[in-house]
Image 1 (cartoon, rainbow, N blue to C red):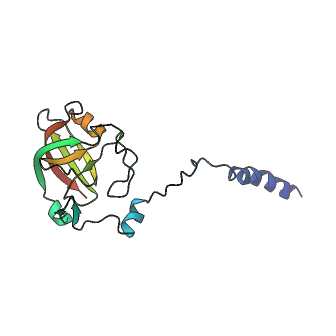
Image 2: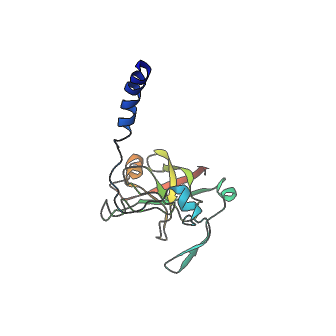
Image 3: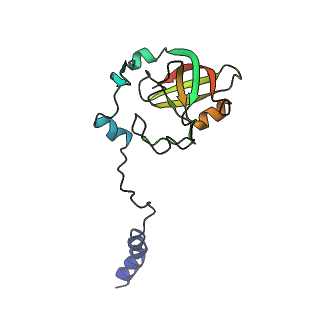
Length: 166
């Protein structure tokens, strides 16, 4: 009897703790994990069309030695929250307060070192989205990445992009 009572005293707190939850309430909107998005074909490193123009992403092999210099901008310059909460092309929720990037041709995901050529500030960001779809821009960065690279208020900067890995 004593063993049963002792076992019950040890198991009761464990059983009761499984009744509580720290999960947030379901919002009704299903969000895919990156793995689910990939399996369902939502992530494509295949040609895609935006505004009637065909974009052909490079292979991982091509991307390994890729470097580019050009103009960078950042998402949501019109209103900071414009893209916040939307899904990226990689199936993740975009958060402007976290460093990330969009590129027209790099495979998703890719890691790139971005260097502001005016200030020499640099950082590594993860490319998880497509864009920018403005002809003279080479990369779109999140607001946080633009802040860390020192061009948030200016809006654009001349940058060098170097692929680190996928």
